[in-house]
Length: 211
Ligand SMILES: [Zn+2]
Image 1 (cartoon, rainbow, N blue to C red):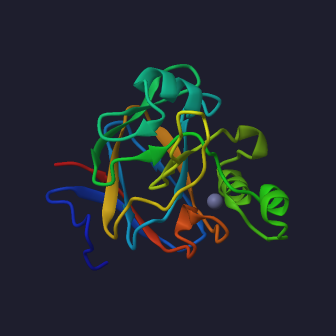
Image 2 (cartoon, helix red, strand yellow; image 1 turned 45 degrees about the vertical axis):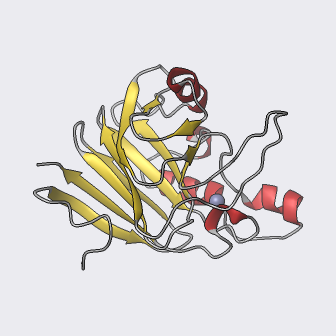
């Protein structure tokens, strides 16, 4: 496809280059050493993200271990995504946004009913479950996910909420796989909080081997 900000990647061997429509899920298998670039094409679009050890999906992204071992609740360049069994899964090797959420998990049909009094037909939870089903996984394999490009400030008294996203059109994050992985995203369909800037937009996912 035509190049956009964040691509093309000079010298890279591209294995997949996909525009994930607003509100849709996507998944890919990524080999150790290869990279995933997620591009927020229009800005302020939350990308809900999970990853699993391809050889043993019970060992999966773990938010608490990631917070403890990065000593921070926000993810940025140099941070590692750690697994349930405290193994390195992915390292953020480039990041033009600077802050990604580890706390807030994903939206769902059920929580939107509670929070907003609206009966919806999809949320990131159901997106994840549908995408995981393609790989023989499901609801029981869910974990608290990363939210790339989502900003969740925490006040000194512990007050917390989703704020307007910090990402600009074309901001991207590059993740290096530290083991063979299954990665799953839900390109958040939420319209009732600032996670997707009130209007969900497409993102681009590129799987590649760097030069
Ligand atoms: Zn969502």
